Length: 79
Image (cartoon, rainbow, N blue to C red):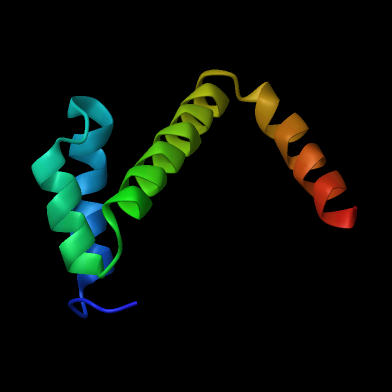
């Protein structure tokens, strides 16, 4: 991956705002440039981040699901 040495930090700084406000085209282009990746890669990473964030929120709202989640992860890693 090419781009600036602090590209990960720059992209991460976008994450919180993008979770709440969405990811506009200029932000996609900026992140792609910072990280040396494609616009499609940035959009896919953003979509994955939103899915993971939603999962974290669900676990936070229902702490009992954290135990189930850990068990499912353990089972998946054994397979």
